[in-house]
Length: 213
Ligand SMILES: C[S@@+](CC[C@H](N)C(=O)[O-])C[C@H]1O[C@@H](n2cnc3c(N)ncnc32)[C@H](O)[C@@H]1O
Image 1 (tube, rainbow, N blue to C red):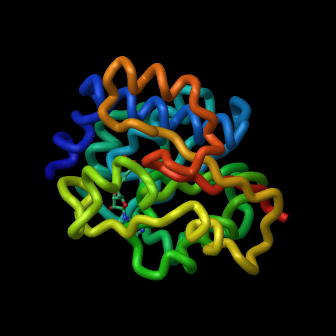
Image 2 (image 1 turned 45 degrees about the vertical axis):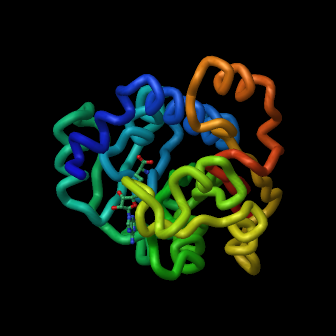
Image 3 (image 1 turned 135 degrees about the vertical axis):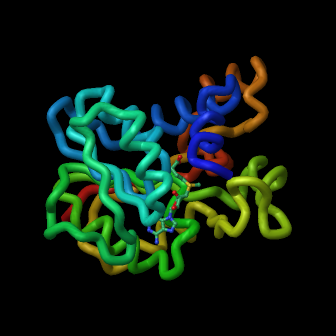
């Protein structure tokens, strides 16, 4: 899939709803304020990075895919920073960013534990790392047998498995939340999403949020 094709999905009614729903959860969990800095690890075409920048954050996107970054650069405000790099070896000093965000990216990284440790290392205050959730309807539709479309090759975790990746790291107040319970995005799915507590473990995206100790 081309970067333009990938990003265009977020402009479809269903893609927009899923993106908005996931961003709303991450944003609520990070509780970032305008002017705070944020690193988006595995930013791809930068849809979430751009959303964070639109909320007034000083946003940096990192991804190993130069074509995705070219798209991100060409379709964003010049104030945003785009860095080619690997989640397992982030090219930043300790505590470089107020917040670290990652959405459905570390599930494509070999050695996720190292990538999680790196995300925690460069965070100064909070992080919100989202994984594809194996205990979700989304997994039943898109994740089985190696996955389909943009989900092909991803590792799907339960919230408990994702939380375990933070064991032994300098973190506190870990919480696990999820969103996108019915991925169809139909009117009834949207209604249910509004009433469903994010503490339920069945959303398509499961997010582990916490603070740097
Ligand atoms: C499904 S896309 C998610 C992109 C974006 N976060 C979003 O939600 O639209 C997965 C991303 O993970 C990135 N990725 C794969 N291996 C990576 C690595 N070792 N370090 C950082 N990002 C990686 C891919 O290049 C891709 O952009």
